[in-house]
Image (tube, rainbow, N blue to C red; front, side, top):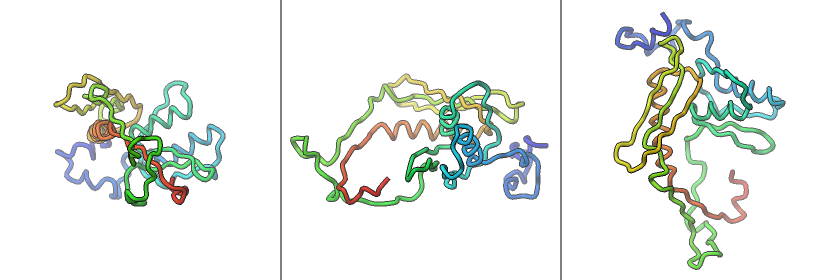
Length: 209
């Protein structure tokens, strides 16, 4: 019986076939992330021609808006769990999944030196302090195996002087493993993103977004 099948893989040997199998348990109520984003944006007054959601393909088992929040806040909650960005381009609001292939490579010789710097550096580098970064990331979510009650998964960095704890409270239905992956990816991204590079490109790259 769904959701114990397919989640309890130690009992159900065919649980891994659930996504592509002929079973209907638990599938009829699932929505797509793209459909939810379109619905939210329409509530703000936008129309489908204002949007592009083709690049977000995740399935959402449940998302609860349990108090009065802005459309932007509702979308930002989804961003925390599904790792996508919202950008304005060509007069449209586009939702783009993070990651993927490299669109363009630019050689160092193609950068414009910083004329305001004494050394005319090609890069301006900013690095966040270690104590500002999270030692632990908690993901609070709705657990479908336990009557959709709140549950928590976490990821922790052992070797650090930081004491910061980042908690993502998401009223979204996840399995335990998916929530754990979100915690792992969020912690990794926070630490990788501690170093930021700023640089200038010549006018021939104006078309780059």
